[in-house]
Image (cartoon, rainbow, N blue to C red; front, side, top):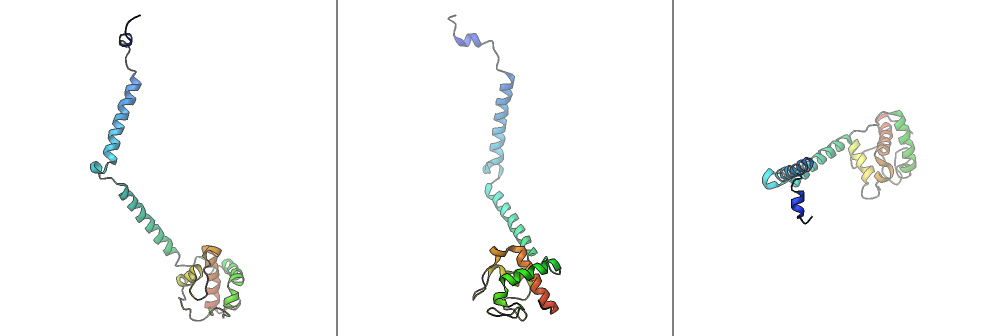
Length: 160
């Protein structure tokens, strides 16, 4: 029993599973270093980030393109809902009949544009000189409904 431990264990082999795991981890480590070290592979987090930013810009541009057309144009239900929103939020300044009171008339020429993108921006972002922003309060869809109502009155000469 005075034999050193090394002699007692000399006849035991290293388990095969341990060797497979060890060499697998070494191979994975070498692959990882080769694949993600810029000096070897050319990979860079900055390149990945710039690709993601370009994709986000393209997505934002597509979203902005959608904003140029009113999705509720001609939808009678949306026009009716827009009439209610207009009465509650806009009529105080622009008048019940859109002819203006404190604010300008919406029936004639509009300073910031008479088409949907300019009108949407005026409502959403506000304008200097009195027009407050309503984007946070109303949201995208409700603003478009108000514009559908205003457009229906402007285009068809209907009175509310």
